[in-house]
Image 1 (tube, one colour):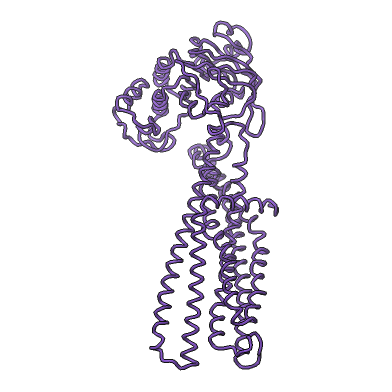
Image 2 (image 1 turned 60 degrees about the vertical axis):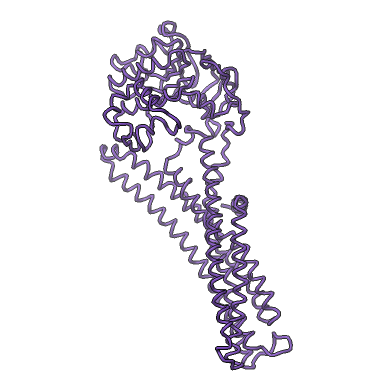
Length: 593
């Protein structure tokens, strides 16, 4: 990572801090207030020692001084507590905002982009990398201001007492940030490499965890264990590299601050024995002056030392921000709900979809299909068929708004890119070949957060999807684990169908809804779908020939083009469709055979 990129990432991080300016200002203010009371505390302590040792004052006469010190200690403790709270709130507020930015971007890019990377990568981006920005906002940014304010105030107090000690402070103070910067130059790169290794390890582990059954059945446990060990070893080395730099920076800062404090102590020591006679303003250096400045000497460098300690947090945040900024900068070429004109699909019983000169591309600009043109009339039943890789799923993703496109997709006369996506999704009933069920109850998986769903509505869609056959035995409060655990494929598909029926949209999009189902489940699902899609616009991807005879139109795709279009009777005797009919398996009817 070059210096310009580090500078840009640092500016981006500081820009986010404006969102929590109130908490940031409060943290800085409390830290500054604590330093003022620290100076008063040092003056009281030096005055007590001076009067006890030099002026031989009775200790009971200084009782008010002791009480004042105790009060000041309590006030400083309260300031430190408030500063920690304010810093945490500052970091929390910004982390929530950054996570929301990532979630909004994920929603904008859609599942077509998300599936291109392992789930563990997204988990690391959204959780660990955002979490590692906490110390930057809660500690480093406030400390940047305090590392200037506190030494400046101490210099204002010290110079009238002794210009020599003030000069030592002034000349040695820049050494701390100078060497902090030199040591920290490689820290951001080390953190960036560490996060990359963590992303790879997380993605690798999560994918292998999901595929554990396949790995064990094919006796690949030893090989995958070796791969995981290699990934974890790389992550271990990257982590130790980061820790090595952190400890090195702390050691360097401690060394130079200790040397500077020692110089001040030696100066006062030789001044008190009469070997040095400069630094004062025509009077002798009193014990009060020496003790006061020596007590303040460590506190003068402490903000700079803290800044050096928290500099590791900056390097960590810059390393984490690189992937986040790159991700947020991805051009989706898809208008989201905020950027769109918030048009609604015109109200009618069903939908009319007209596709003209459509070219669908990936998010990185690669052409996936097109140009193609076709028309889905209101209430029509359309099948989308073709060999694997023909572009069927890419076309569906474009209609759903998950992939960028050129050309035109008009929904009831309105361009898809100008529609409010939230309203558009409310018009879609979706049933895929691999239904996703979340961890929760059967009822929660059917409603998916919909409010005000009555028991009658729930029972109705369950009966229409023939899901009541097993729900009556299990109950709506039966717990379903991740990846449909605890239910068969057929049961999960019928729950997905009930979920789609509850949507009550005007467009049905079906992606192999009967794939991997047994004969009974397939018959029940198709019966329910036939009843539900009557009179509604339907687009179904299918490899099953026995599901195509009743379709109004069949679109045959090959290599990203629509090569045939018509009813079953019109296209069955020629072209690719005829070849697929001839090659079908008698029992399975798989068009990819």
